[in-house]
Image (cartoon, rainbow, N blue to C red; front, side, top):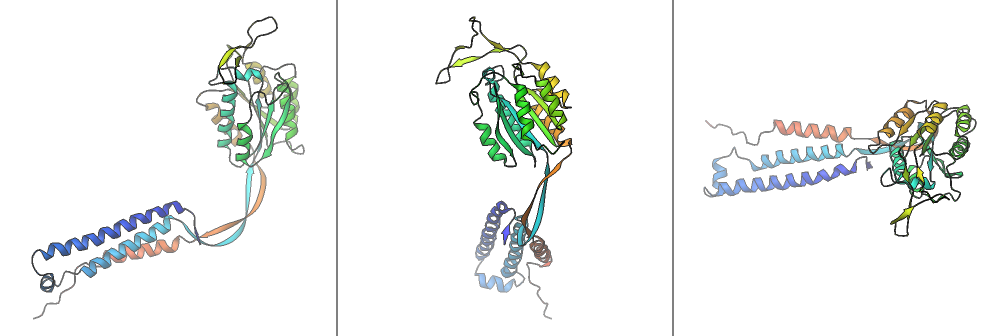
Length: 337
C-alpha cells in the first residue's frame, strides 16, 4: 500500500485538532452545567441531554474527515505492469562559446543570457530528447541526445567561453556537427536551436543549413546581442573589467549581432529567427512551433502502475457524514402517563 499524494496527509493534523476541540467542547458543557448544581441530579432531571450521543456524532464527523483525508492522499494498493510510451522529437541546441559572447549588450553577458535561454527551453520540454553542441572556431557535441534533462542541465552549467580552444565563430561547422548528431535514417522529427550573435568566420552556414534541410532538420535561430554592437571586455581573475579586446591595429573590437545570416539560415530549413529578449517571449514561440511538429515514439518502458483505491475511503466518508446528519444529539424521552 502507498499514497499517490502523501503531502495531503498533513491534513491529519486537522483531524487531531478537531478531536481536541470536541473533547474540550463536551468538557466545557459539563462544567457549565455543574454551576447550576449537582451534575448527576441535573442529568437525571434533563434526560434528553446525552453527552454520549454528542460524542458519538463527533466521532462520526472525525472518522468521515479522516477517510476524506485518505481519499485526498490517493491511497493505492495492488500493482499491474503497463507499457508507457513517450512521444517527442529530437532537439539539438547549439551554443556559441566564442569570445564575442562575453559582450555585455545582453545582461549580464551574451553567454550568460544563452545559458538562461537553454535552461528555459529545457524547462518547457515534455518528452523530447535533447542534445548540446558547443562551438567557437570549431564545434563538438557537448551532450549527446538524451531524455535525462537533469544531465543536460549539468552539461549546460559548465558551458562557457573558453570551452572550445580554437576561437572564432563557426556557425556552419556547428550546423554540420548538430546534423551529424541526429539519427541519419530519419528525415523528420529533428530541430536545431541555434543560439549565437551570428558573426560567422567563413564556414558557409547557408550551405550547411541547406544540407541540414535535406536531412529533415528544421533550424530555429535565436540572436543573442544587439545590432548596434558592443566591445568585448577583458576581465581579471576576480571578474573585474580591465579593458576591451583590440585588433592588431590597436582598435577596440566591436561585435555586432548579424541578424541577416541567422534569418537566412532559419528560413533555408523552414524554421524561424527570433531575437533574444529579457522576457524570453521567444522561448514560448519556439516551443509552440516545436509542439506543432509531428512527434515520434522515442521509447516504450515497462513500468509498474499502482491501482487507485481512493473510492473505498470516499464511500465510507460519505456514509459516516450522512449517518451523522440523521442522528440527534438529544435522547428521546418517553412520556409516562
